Amino acid sequence: MTIHEAGRQLLFQLYHIYDENEAANITDWVMEHLTGWKKIDRVLNKNVRLSLAMESKLAEYIKLLNQHTPVQYVLNEAWFYGMKFYVDENVLIPRPETEELVNWIVDDLKNKNVSILDIGTGSGCIAIALKKKLPGAIMYACDVSERALVVAAKNALLNNVDINFIQADILNRGEDQKLPPVDIIVSNPPYIPVSDKKEMNKNVLKHEPHLALFVEDNDPLLFYRAIKNIPASAYYFETHESLAMQVAQLYSNAEIRKDMQEKDRMVKGY
Image (cartoon, rainbow, N blue to C red; front, side, top):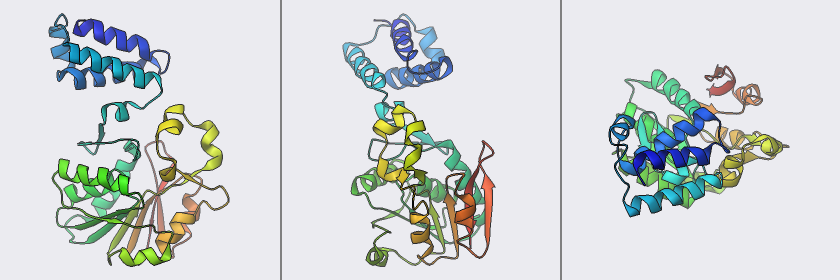
């Protein structure tokens, strides 16, 4: 099978799952990952034959993609803030919207030497991006999931940053003794109401960790209240657009910002 034939086969398989543009983008990503060649190089070398190992790997990728596995999990690869991250089904896939939260924090804290705690770090993307942009900051990151912390530590090593990782359940008041005193807390906690499940894509519901996504409809501020009890000078959150005002009202002073879709998705409290 040539590179050209492999790309066409993959694209055809994706058309019944994704729209035309997304299928083309995923095909490009997978073929670059498989061959190590950018698109222009694959076009120039379209008649080069894949090795048997590559053909086997491509068949595995197609099988997983047909099961609605997100391409990031298929390739164990995601990009955030211009950096590559290892991801698997123990952590959420980093979202572009979360980069805006990082931008806000970086703008507020540049040229300041502060200590920062990322609560519910998952892949470590927020903590690692902040440490890259604020090298003078002392960065801590915690998660209830030991498996998530393994992924986060792997990503800190991959991106050559020093992060202090802590396993802690912030909903257990005794566990907060594990957390160091810090100046700033940032968190992208579970905030999607369970009732929203019916509207979500299969690739999210079947593969991303529900522990990191959902909160009960009758107590959507559960994590935000628990985080507020952990002392800090300022708190930065990502949240559900329907919760932004309620999160802001937990604090004497607060600011709400919109994301790239013009939705109220970020809150700073102090």
